[in-house]
Image 1: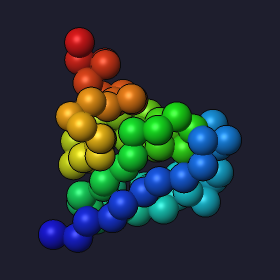
Image 2 (image 1 turned 180 degrees about the vertical axis):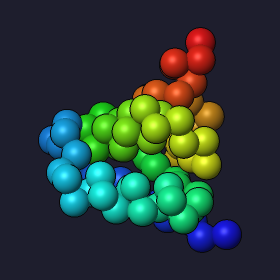
Image 3 (image 1 turned 90 degrees about the horizontal axis):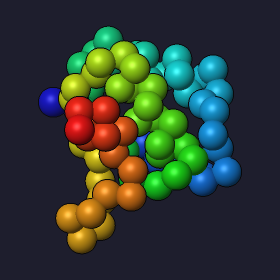
Image 4 (image 1 turned 90 degrees about the vertical axis):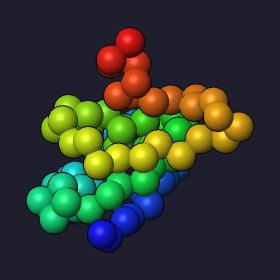
Amino acid sequence: MTSVFVAGSRQISRLPTEVSARLDTMIEKGFQILVGDGDGADKSVQRYLADRSYLNVVVCCMKNHCRNNVRKLANA
C-alpha cells in the first residue's frame, strides 16, 4: 500500500486547486493519507477528505491528543 504524508502552513485556510486535484488522484488510487493535526492546511486537508467520505486517513497527533481531527468531531 502506498502512503503519503500531507502537511502545510497554518496560514493556508483554502486548498489550492492543484492540491485538491492531487488529493483526488490519491483517493482514486486508494492511497493511505497521513495528515497533521494543525490548523490551516492540515485541517483543510482533513475537511476535504472527510467531505469526500474518504476513510483511508490517519491523523498524526502528539501525545494521544489531536488539536484537530475533523472526522472524529463529525462522528461525535
